[in-house]
Image (cartoon, rainbow, N blue to C red; front, side, top):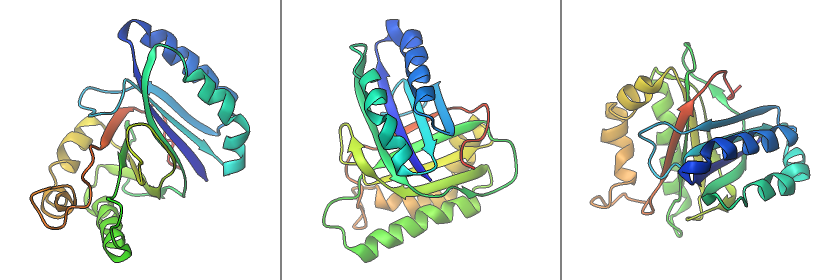
Length: 208
């Protein structure tokens, strides 16, 4: 599988038009899974519109990429963050999937491979304990776009918004284990740039 995420900042007066234009452009890419939706309140650096496209392979994306990216050059789109990445989604816990969330982050250059692997393992560990996660994927980013040279995309499906904002963000595995990688007051910090935390409503599962 090969996926693409784009987080779009859009002038408020043009958001409905841009949402429709981007959704139409996403359909023309031939992606076998696609999501184009307004972000929900609580997203941080996450844009106004979240786009997720999933292809069978990288070649499918490359064939339609130029035309899709041209749509994102709309003057009403003021900023774009995102990445492309290979990988396979994993199923987690049973339940409905009402929210999709994407986290874009950058591991500090020069971080040694062993430390980077431990960080990735601890992100994966969260999906075992947070039972409101129904599916997930952790990927190393290709072709980063935007403010930062993103190195990872960590995405999940949640049962609902409450399952993200409560059981996930407030779980001890989050604040007692994973947060140290992001905390500049600890010696373990390897994420120093501002992250993109973006989520939206999900009508049907896309991580499958």
